Length: 470
Image 1 (cartoon, rainbow, N blue to C red):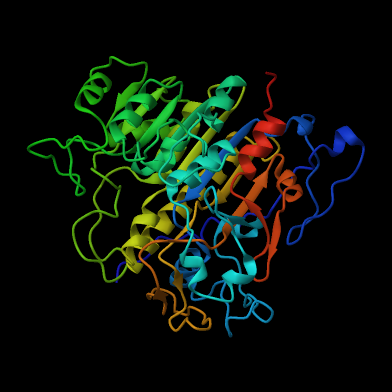
Image 2: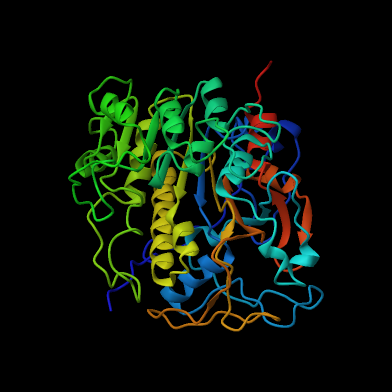
């Protein structure tokens, strides 16, 4: 058995909240459930975060995280056991494993325009959460713009009107902005922070808009000259970017410094002592995903040799170093996109690999904040856009059973769908302005507790902290 990467050696960071506006109002901020006393407010607390890092595990519901925790340590949180009765179900006890599990936490509803989340129905009937689910385009648009839209739509509201996204708002306030993904850069989630299109499948149109946008960093997969084993193709496949757009990027005909070399990502990640471009466009030398799509059928994590392309933590560090050259601040969206791909495939081994890669990216971001910035000026959000695969206990339906497992072994679990579900997903937050989200609670789930809607981050930033005059 190949050893799993350790997430425990870095230790667990304790939640440290910034008292939102307390200094300005002359009041003290209330303590939040599950955390200690709030940290003192910075002088600019009423202005909110200078930097925002929005980290999205695509498809990563509670049980995706739990399965990874079981594999790493043999214990986890988030499990439920009993009849499908919201009046009697509760989460079973468990300890934090990942760094962010000790941050402030809410649940997040994910439905698209015209949908709803009914917490009583969700825990009364297994079929209910398998209807009305969002896709990544609608979820990404809601998360990036604060506007619900229809499935398949990027950067347009439900009436087809263009809506401003958080990257655009960051730039309007003098900040820099970027997107990073472990799947193609023109896929739905990164596209939601950069483009406006009636269909998420219009990859060439989306890529063209992203290249001509004001984004400062675009990193992801989708290289036309390589397969998913990072082997050079005899005939390029221009699935995610048009040939002419790739040629103008590679030929230096855009305002981006283009790279597809792992060594350049590593150089950017080493920081300001090294060469850092003002704007960078990086394509990993893989077709669709950094690792999930590689050849072979995994029976356990890492039993199939991984390719050698750049990983999500390195991409994230590289993006942070480039964006932070702007003294006014930045917005960065980081997506662990292939968690969703593994969920659709009901592939437990590679799902754990992808969640671990995402968790490592979170750890890299935390280290960057604590060495290059601070929690008084930077806000970090760790969440998902929806759950994929209806991952749950081994004998769920009609009731609920907990996933179980030993460290280093695949957990005992079940997949009950090959698609997205309408469950709430976890929402972890730490840093400048984090208390604001606890003022936006829209309901209480009988098992997961208070929840906010997936429009909440954009609403808090664009209507509050980063508001601009018309």
